[in-house]
Image 1: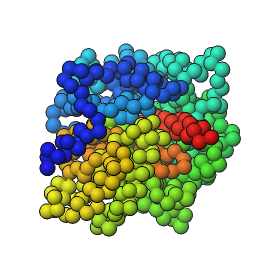
Image 2: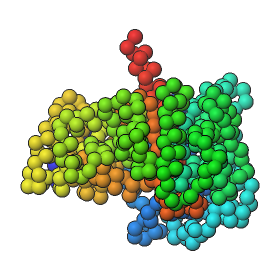
Image 3: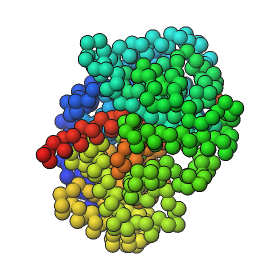
Image 4: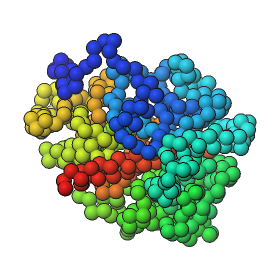
Length: 506
């Protein structure tokens, strides 16, 4: 059986011979992405982007084992495509001054693994103290330099002939204001550093955000408070206050009904503008699925609420990162009901949604998908369950006969343990934890929750409210930043795909 799995893993794509595999440098990856898609935004690779990031501030699990040991890379590397995922990050992030990274330990420098432990000594030191030691306002210098680079990359500089109004308008809902949502939003948008790429509109509260700006010492840049989407500024980060907040105070780390009501008000206001076509994409900060429940919100999460709002019968929870994409057949379903929801029709529906999304949202012409089994060891030829033999294998054989590159079913533990996911564009798991546990173990820092199958673009960071570190200036904004970048990339790629598809039908 192992030999058969190995054959299937390599089926459909020839393996390179030793010595002929090209080495993908950050420059090669950027050139590859530019050649495949003429995107007007550019973003450095993973190593460049993480140089300036502070050490782990507590809202992600520690890596087990030796902290000095770098994460193992596949000899073949992840597949390349024109959208930047996986393997070739979207080229829309401004480069930063390498000198600014010296104050914090970054990832691999000069080919040497990063000493992660050394960076943890000051992980609980308040961010404002670290910034003060590094020169305070001098942080703005590399960001101003990055702005100039972004102008050149996006064509928005002097004489470019493009107005700011042409850029995408990205809505960001505040989520539970007692969690880390406000903090990661502010850190991601600080100094208006995304203005060259999009116009951010936060659906929340100026009062709440100003309280968090004081807590995390981000007072030296301006937010534009406004009442409607029609009054936004394309030069600043905008905030639309969505509920009467004059007498409301924040309680970081506490679960309160007021925070749940405010989160729903922000989400409803953002969805209204999304329906009206005033937003190009929506990024949702984490909510508490308990305190948001009301007569207007009786859903297990954002995804189900948005599906109902846009009249979508089926959608796909699609977790994406630069190195891995994972979708699930059964999303927020209790484990006891998983088996009854794993049917031939449902698996086919999710495969169809995944295939369509990989083409229109990520620019992959011929996607290659791995499908996991339901039972341990993929059923062990019927000894541990018959679902693989009776449902999954016949369905995949039928799809392959139609020319689709779908393979499996694979045992989940061995599949992720051997990094076989690097040979595929996406992985379809049977249930929530089967897919999300390995995804977050591999890509928690930069993972993004993307809802495929919707008529609108929606992303969110892959973490929750993290009440235990809320208000302590420990939250890492990387996933929120990646969610915004992914929303920009998908919105642009989808628009381009649909225009080409419509032209081909004329």
